[in-house]
Length: 293
Image (cartoon, rainbow, N blue to C red; front, side, top):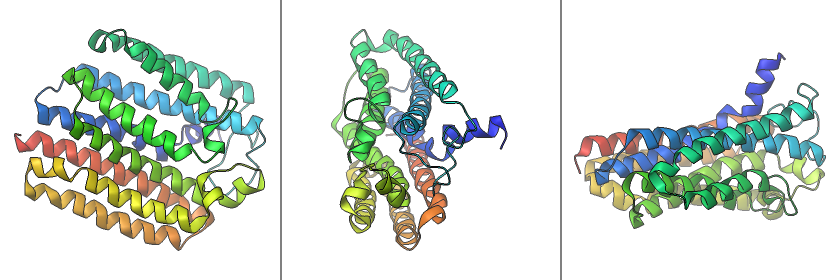
């Protein structure tokens, strides 16, 4: 595998819709509120993607250092573990990418004020705390909670705030919905890696609770996400309810596939879960732009 391919694999393109979806949903709410501003929206999108890539790099480096990745694992190839990327190069890439995210975040102070600094510090700490530190979140069954917070609650509410200069209950409910959808991407990942993680002592939610609970939670998360945004869809007009209904049907179909597969056969379903989330958020944005609310 070439060096470029190894780095692309390390970025984990299948997971990036998780960070994009939150910003798209926030833009949809801003369009509904009549406060959309393109520049802070674009900066939020760049920040979100850079922060996720930094988190993915950090996860690969620190899991390798902790001995939690093994060659030949069921999931996507890990470049550091397989010897394709040096640990030092991955560590440098982690902090360079995180630094770029912080630089973009500093630009957002123009719209949000200096109180954004502690928010940015919290996000930067979260990028690392997911995989390292005294209590790595992903090693203690808290990965899904972290995803809900850092890929749902924070990006949706903060992106909306930077355009509207206010918070909103409907937006908060939408942020929970997006967070639950994002958590499902991680659930598929950990459902796939259950045996590998258990063998090295990595206690993900799937390892702690077992396959049945993990798969049931996946199903519940998707249905709950749809329910949380019903008010927003109704505000756009009853006809738009076709989108969340379609999402729910597709979600159940993917869930049925998840519970029937094991190992690398789950990789396409991880991508499908992320793409469903992205399509849902993008459809919400399009509906908001067309509804004239």
